[in-house]
Length: 483
View 1: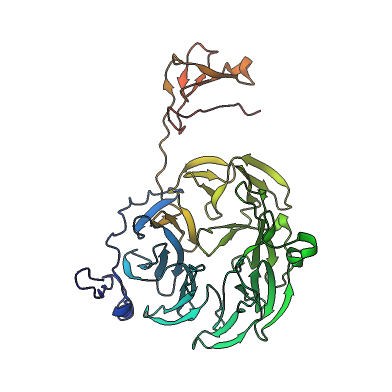
View 2: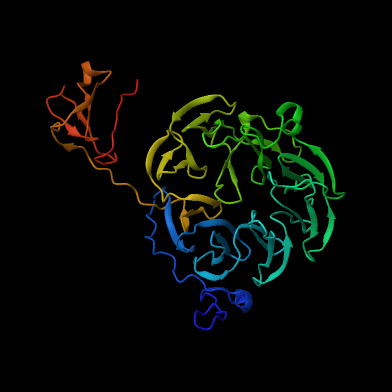
């Protein structure tokens, strides 16, 4: 809005937008708010031949104090939809990353690319507020309707919507059930007598309803057909619901790239944590038969409401496992096709496994080669929201900015050679002789200033090892020879 007049400001269509989109790229004036003034940051060009990730664009979107909330990529319209925690929907050109417009809707996103609809909603609202799902036409960006609810699933083939709300400890016994809605008219077709958050499985034309447990329902009749986890709500076994250390279903996802359903069931403990964090349970989407844990993929790119999964990379599975009770431990396991362990690394976990490049991206910015688990460089670390394998692009968030990251073309690290330096006049905190010392005369020494030194002449002379090692006077490095 114009600060002076309080009237809507019409936003221009990007100069490089296709001519056919010129009439449909701007929303009706009454719906517009001011677009971000900041343009995508200028990023260095790709480095030829590099197999490391590269930052293509850093697009500041959210105002100070807010962060990016959710993301969807519309390939049909060549647009990116990004919400922030300040209640805004940012629409960007997916090629130039320039802003198209900003609309006053925040929260989660659900995109029906086939039927040209974008659904924007807050899954949780303040007491006294009514949850609302804003329905936008992706051709005009006009709001064409509002549905009451805080969760939605879409049957794109039949253009049906399933509308519900997250199931929480405050959900009442008389809460409305999941509504089946016509996607064109937004008219209600029928109501399923079960409240909760809907997840649609297109491979069975079946609905899952996450409501502490997970129910199955028939969209054609509206009948609840089953309960996948009756033990979760069996009061004879658990005493009462929502207890400290109780287990319940937090979410479910249909993962089309894998043809599977993932369901997250974990124990919930106040403050200190419950210990081992259980990975999701996986099911064949066509049969709903359980997938053996040894052949199950790993959820990733889950910093928004959508997810993807990493399956086999070559002939190996890469699995993150976490322990969370007072302290947090992470481990990266590498398993073979039969699910048998090949190796593991204490303290490691991947933010994203890229099967295309054979690399793992770590939260601290390191890139590891998956075949050897050795560090090979850096990536512009971000919390990953989505991945487009066809274009080789990752989309992530860092605070209030959207990061667009190419999987190749990043800067190749320059490795500093060892520096000829004597041992420092400080405490030597560790000395390690090579297992083949009688042959190679090699010794490694650790100093209290965090540096590592090497001698290849039994200690007569020394060099300080650099080669990509972090240099920080407050850090402590330890070293060991492999057996």
